[in-house]
Image 1: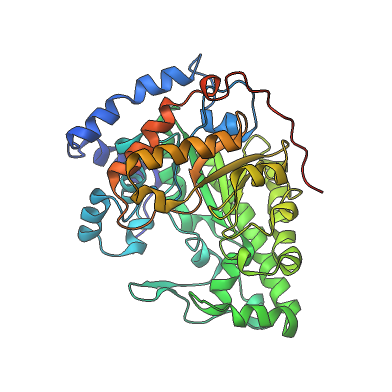
Image 2: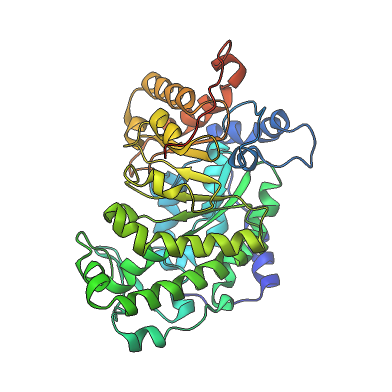
Length: 406
């Protein structure tokens, strides 16, 4: 862990780092050189908002869908692997301003996605509420003292945003670096998903402790979820005030609950967050992604978010029909397609975009980029997306207005 620095010092350090960054490969330089042209093709004026933000709001008349990838910065990239050898601690990489900025910008420089998401982790804010954790190379996140009692919940503290200074500093630098050519995304974990780690003490395949608490200690669990909802709300506002233009909420383990249990133990706390953000930051689109959400789509519609992410197990056309035209959708190419021949990947991108329709769609994977994904395939994904034009894909097509399934 690094010692805290002032915002000005951190900004100067990161700026010095960026100016001294080593030259990229020739392919990266070619993609980087296209950035200004790409931006110009999407904007009629310098003040126009990024394509991703406009798609999230469901605006008409966009030329194509914007695209980014969950986990687009990370272990599949050679540049990230080289950096990780120099900085082997994930906590260091995700809690040091200049490293966060460097890692976040690696896929931006290489592939020019329409969304640039902060390199961080959903557990990053835990120490700021009084829950220390570590990350083991073999076990993943480890919480030495799982929170399972009323006394432990009472010991939690309001989120101390000063302990997350590196997040705010990084977002401010990134917003300037991207300079309107893409949308800057922040993200958080949903209360239920964060609570699974806090209660279980780390990763789990069964969720038995927290699921048992729903019945044996419901008041304790409600207290924990309420505290997390308040902390996460404040953390989102902090990210927005630091430069994030869109926020994705990951309820990664919400899909592990039966739908009626998710309705009781996850949904109300996400709604609490969304209501506060819509009051404090009404201009910021919110995306909700739940892994395994095929059985939850109808229950997600009234949460108040702007975009619902679909995982790859949901048929895009069916998901769009079930959600209706009132919400935008995100997704949902199967990450495994990035291991397929490039023409196959091209066909799948076209299929998903056509299924989503010419409005309110953010192209993404149905889950995060997998390890060992070829960088060539990631580049191809974004190159194909930039070549798409709705007027050509939907020429002569009359778009049916979709009503959500009751």
